[in-house]
Figure (cartoon, rainbow, N blue to C red):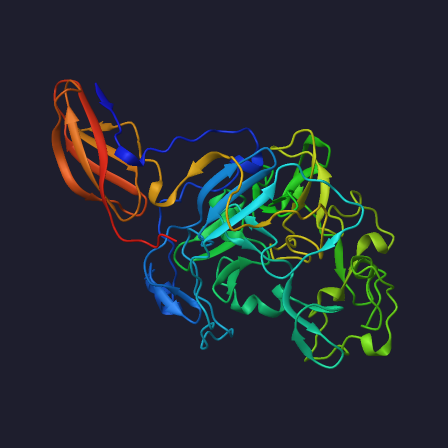
Length: 471
């Protein structure tokens, strides 16, 4: 009989589990793994992922652990610490489809401390989304809204927000990597379908490791999508698949249908940019009627239809019925039951088309449905319970040993950059060193050793840790 004991000295972490999806749904299993990028297409083709890099404002001079570092909570808040970097290989990023012009910046550690409300409320008066992070995905990467930070000011496109806001996916998707993400400065983020994260979460996505591409599975979905993000109003974003009947978990699963269509004169939509769509007028608390100076640019090859988020009409304003003709309201959410909320919740859903392409309004609408009280904080100023600690302090867990042909194989969850000592004992009193300096491979450690004919116990201890970004 072979038994295993795990010793991790001062690095033991005790976590308190809480039955609350706002606390438990964060993707932490790769927390002990370094963030990596493909710097160029050539690196992507050859599989040359690097852990340090520098371009523009994105400098990572030492390795940094990916994603969520810590999750803690109080009665009213969930706090996350994150590097803001995904645990799949990110990049490469280019400015053009021919991939001859590198994107001006790589991502880097954002040292995020963000809080999400545990008790969300729904105000009658809605708040517009701002530029920058409006929430966080469960892998610790920032959630940006559906704009790209440029708008038409009456004569040209300038940075900021206005009545005609450029659609980030339409205008910037050429700069997205295979995961549909890029960065503003060094702040890595998603605007639309987080397809690589969804693959990690098991949400109906296929991955081709040969070309590093993610695609929507062609099979019929059989399960409800997982939570992929939390918005700063405290409501979740799910992947694209929900229950057919919003209040019946036994109604079957299907793709959630966006509530928006392009304003091309079809389906009862208006045509042109001489008035605002009704949803945008509501969001801006103004009339849809515009003065000539407020018109958008004429539709042309320079300013094609779809360039601005206001080039979309909401079906609810065109005589269509929510939950009958389409699923998601003008905020890209609905009230429904979900696996995590069997009694119901307001929830946003990732919007995609029938062929898996991102569909407006992508992850959420132009306004928050709930009260957006969540935000970045400088420090935690109240008593909290720690639910998870990762990164350099990731807990070591030794799997049950296996024996094949009289060889014992040990596998444990490791911290990348760490080296480990493996010891064995027949009585738990005296220990013999089997191996030292066993290096972690990513966030996994393993060793094989000869079996003995008697009971054998094992313990694994991390002995060193390479230099890493401690911010």
